[in-house]
Image (cartoon, rainbow, N blue to C red; front, top):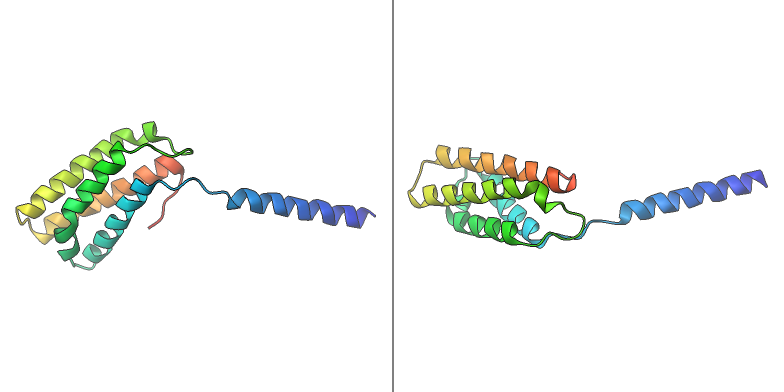
Length: 132
């Protein structure tokens, strides 16, 4: 009888743990949109390919502004990251302006890397996550 009770308790514990882990935060569409543009421009830049950011700097700026102006879904602490979101917008505006001025690949890569690092600091602060 004790073995059966132990098996039931273990099974129940595993079920509750799995259910708790399966629950995810709501998706923050504007954060995800920024992440998509960042990923699709930063990773090529790491390989010396700056054409994606040269073509999409305006889009990156637009999605950064949209993210800053959006309402955070439940589970996210937007107030905790607002200063960083403002810095992200400022940085994407500067990057876009430098793309329009035909800045060097090295300058753009440096700015994009700073924005990439800032993005990851923001995601860590607002939700405890960090991924590409």
